[in-house]
Length: 171
Image 1 (tube, rainbow, N blue to C red):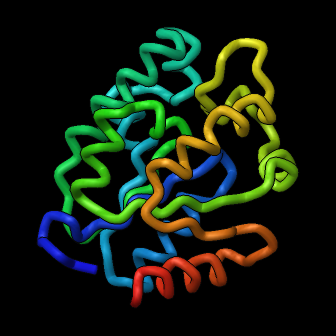
Image 2: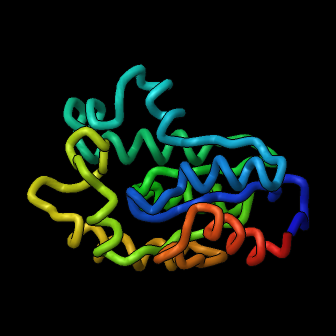
């Protein structure tokens, strides 16, 4: 997996509620990697919650901020859990693919809807009037486009998902 030193990261992408952060922490422990949640990086930089950024600055500004933060990441030996909207940033995704292996945690729309309880405080980057179904339809092709590895998280425990990722990585 480690062709070069600067590609020694695992980047998790997927819909909100896919478990990127939860899986990421356990994967980091299992692989003895560091862990980075890019949503937290954005919140720290902007000094407010994601939903506040989206409400105050708008969706396009949030996506620009996210793209800027992700495209400048300089880490090594790290599991990176991205926000679900990371795939809207072409510059960010190109950079992430240069510094690591991109893993898409795939779930069905029904499972995503079951897991997500409060869209408004979750900080989900979506257009006014859009539904989770609209978002799922819009983003799924992007997740598939950028993924080096696709892991099916449907009907699995967090530990099983971690094991699937490690197996796919050859760990």
